[in-house]
Image (cartoon, rainbow, N blue to C red; front, side, top):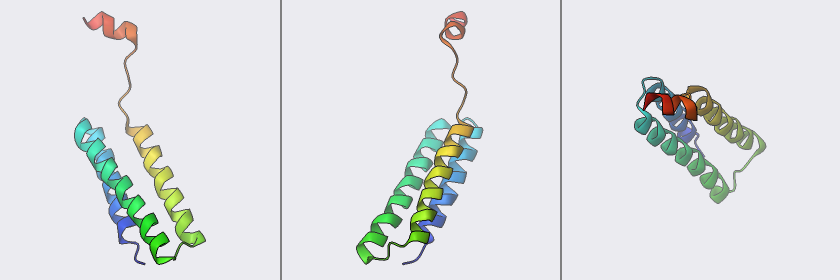
Length: 88
């Protein structure tokens, strides 16, 4: 089994983070969803081919954890309720 879906997923995560940093939230979310689909494709493909190994499992866990970390780091700060009321 090749690992190209993992590389595609990693590129999608980076692209989503870059889109989030440029305030393109919809594009960022779409890229992150595609990244998760790439990671799931890798896991399902490995299970179907019966090549699920410890290194591949660790790579998938790190890829998903990295995705979650980048999403958390690049998320736009949410305004508090009082700050939102002050703008109205």
